Structure formats: structure tokens, C-alpha cells
Image 1 (cartoon, rainbow, N blue to C red):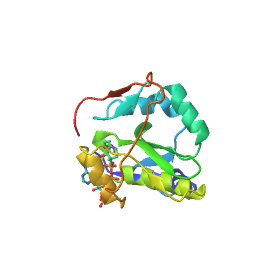
Image 2 (image 1 turned 45 degrees about the horizontal axis):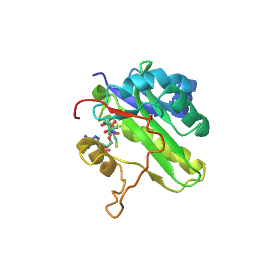
Image 3 (image 1 turned 90 degrees about the horizontal axis):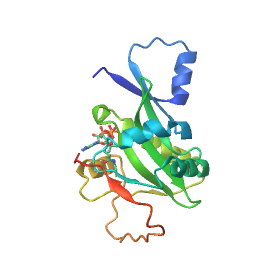
Length: 177
Ligand SMILES: CC(C)(COP(=O)(O)OP(=O)(O)OC[C@H]1O[C@@H](n2cnc3c(N)ncnc32)[C@H](O)[C@@H]1OP(=O)(O)O)[C@@H](O)C(=O)NCCC(=O)NCCS
């Protein structure tokens, strides 16, 4: 793989304004738009072990989510392709991350961390003081990542949920990381 550099859209703009010559390809980290949906969904479908919900992860579901949380979800773009994404929103009290992923061939370049940091900054700007996520216990790579980027694993909590709509069916992608 060619060397890559990760930059936020703001830094990217500043660099090009200064006319700094760059030969390396860059990854742009920016807010996710509803118009990114098809490309993001195609990426999700490649991620082993991801559970995609028939209603919540449909275009209408994601449009609803992004309208409610317009600034906090993130994509990483490399050579015009979406290579990473994070769904992020909050309920006025706690921020939540969902579907954090990087294209397999692009991992271990800091893209995952940069996307998460951007989402966390946006949450802070909206006055949110805490952010949480769920990770399957058997997701070794995912759990190693969260530990490495400084998140605290809670061992004192039982997670509860209740299905409100049985038509919102989760389909798991095959394979293991
Ligand atoms: C988890 C994931 C998003 C990480 O993305 P990434 O771009 O490879 O992560 P980064 O390069 O930003 O890594 C950040 C740190 O985590 C560490 N890390 C990342 N993946 C790791 C792994 N599989 N095992 C151990 N450490 C890992 C990196 O070494 C890096 O540490 P450093 O800052 O000291 O160098 C990516 O592996 C992925 O998409 N996995 C499949 C989906 C998934 O499991 N998502 C999480 C659901 S809870």
C-alpha cells in the first residue's frame, strides 16, 4: 500500500490554501452526510461480524439518525472512496458510537482513532460529557482497539435491552476478524 496520511477536512483545507506541495495520498476525515449512505452501507457489508439492522440501518433509518445528530457521525475518505465510518449521536446526556469500522486493507494507519477522536470532539462541542459503546466480547481486534485508544471497559455493569419492534431484524455479516 502507498503511504497515507490522515488529516481532518479543516487541516486539509489549510494545507491546500498554503499551497504546500504533497506527494503522499491523504485520508480526509469529515462529517458523514446522508448522501454517503450507499457507500457507507457497502463498507459495512464487508466488515466481518457486523450486525446490520433491517430498519435502523436502512437509508431511512440512517437519515433519521443523521437529521437528529447532524455533526457527529464521521467518514474517512481515501482516493474518493469511503474507507472508514463511525455513527455517532447523543440523547442530550450521553454520546454513543455505533458501527465503527475501517476497510480491512486500510487498518492500523490511525484512521479508526482519528475518526473516533473527531466524533468525541464534536460531542464535547455539543456539551456532552460522556460517550459509550457496545463491543461483542469475542471481537478481539475491536476490544484491543478500544483499550489502546484509552477507553475503559466496564465490568461492573449488566447491559439490558428490550425489543420494541420485532420487524427490526439484525443480520450478522459472516466471518471473523
Ligand atoms: C477496530 C478498527 C475500527 C480499528 O481501526 P484502525 O484504523 O485499524 O485503528 P487505528 O490504526 O486507529 O489504531 C489505533 C490504535 O489501536 C491499535 N489497534 C488497532 N487495531 C488493533 C488490533 N486489531 N489489535 C491490537 N491493537 C489494535 C493500534 O495499534 C493503534 O495503537 P497505537 O495508537 O499505539 O498505534 C478496525 O480494526 C475495524 O474496522 N475492525 C472491524 C470492525 C470492528 O471491530 N469495530 C469495532 C466494533 S466495537
